[in-house]
Length: 105
Image 1 (cartoon, helix red, strand yellow):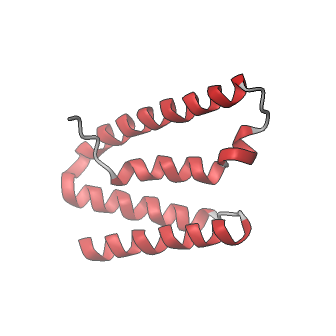
Image 2 (spheres, helix red, strand yellow):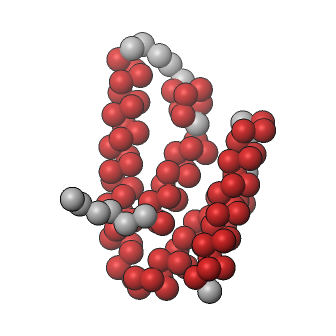
Image 3 (cartoon, one colour):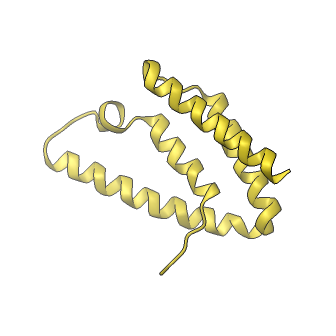
């Protein structure tokens, strides 16, 4: 089951990347499949404790995106989320936080 979920996550991730490279659009279905596979995988691996780790990852990613956004705004650039980063990239990073564990060294 774990191999199936990892394969499903990889296929949906590569399909999203292919769509993004082809015409700069990402549909919600592969991203939803990627997030669902990640949640099922983490539930099988860690149980319900992954929600706290996901919220910690989401907080770190929000601070990183916010820092990049402020940096671009200080340079005087407008429309950052549509031209530079894109909403599909922001959603993908939020879903990536489901798969990864926050390790502190």
